[in-house]
Length: 343
Image (cartoon, rainbow, N blue to C red; front, side, top):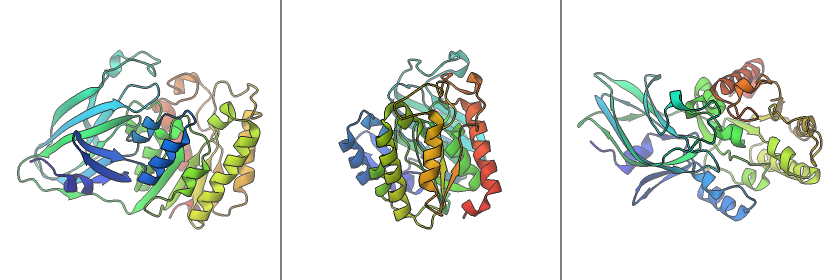
């Protein structure tokens, strides 16, 4: 049986809204207001990135013996072309629809040319009730053309009461995790039993207009991870003004919600001179700004991942799967040591 729009909507996590269009179901992680803010922004951040499906998944219980997926994938990234739609059964990886063979990818796979278009796959779920999770890619746009189960199968949405709201740049969006479930925010949401809402954009800097636009829910924990692109591409006075404005707007909207501000992680060129000043000065200024707000706690990201190219897909800045593991583990350890951050 083919699931209808209402059924698909009921099993979707991490989306601001869904839209049914001629080519299928579109998943939106930004609200219409946020999408309009980015359309008007015009500072070089590709508008198509707002339509990437980072943080969005389907989650449900069923007794179906099969799962059929038909999708269309298209680019929603400035330079990356890989994607993978991953299926989990009872928490274990079952299979995927993807446009790459991991064994054949070069060590530096970040700019490999790969195909987009229509893809489909049938997954054998076998007998009995099970929990199914379908994880959409972080950097590309996926349109769901069809999802089907065995005729007469049960379908029960799996919901998570607590919400994790994540702001940030490419690291938070998920560059360069080949599989979206390896992203650090996905790891945090899973470990904390929370629904992830990802508002990150590759190349983004502190953007006060975004933090002024409230989503349609009240988060239980907010993470903020900007600064590395501010350092590499902004004058000092612009960075300071936008950093202040971002946290001012965010705290105004959520004065009682715990906010974890993660300062920039190590990058290979961190010792270079930039108009924004020294790299570690970004950490210091974020701490100064956040010190004015009792509900904001700062975690240094600089040493969360070893300063070794083996942990970075591009050898420079964006973590690979192992790098994201270390990043997530460091944040989770910090949360364990600071339980007041958790609802």
